[in-house]
Image (cartoon, rainbow, N blue to C red; front, side):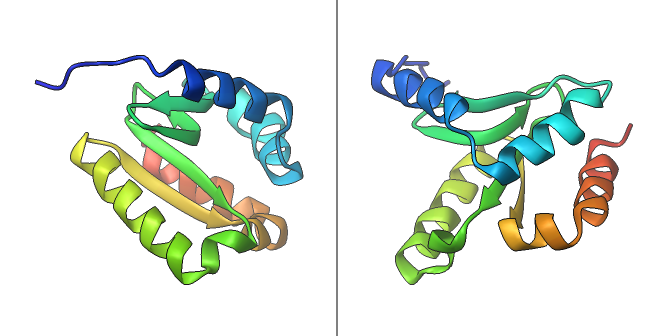
Length: 117
């Protein structure tokens, strides 16, 4: 059983990220996620990571990836992070900012389908 340790620096960083959300995060949050019948939280601390969006009830994490996520080092870091979260029972859904902006309806449909509601 994993011991839950509260990392105050991560909590402080998560609060800052909520206050300084990207345009894409705001778009997904205000135009879709807040209207769903299941609760999502923004910039949620899960163990040693901060995830963009989390539905604890459905064990789904949503990550929006900006350009920096496509560099080799970031890709590897994301792969390790996703593996860790999946080991904890989460399904990780990743969408690029570009995909969100060019196919918002499709991204929303994909999220909805994964929620099974």
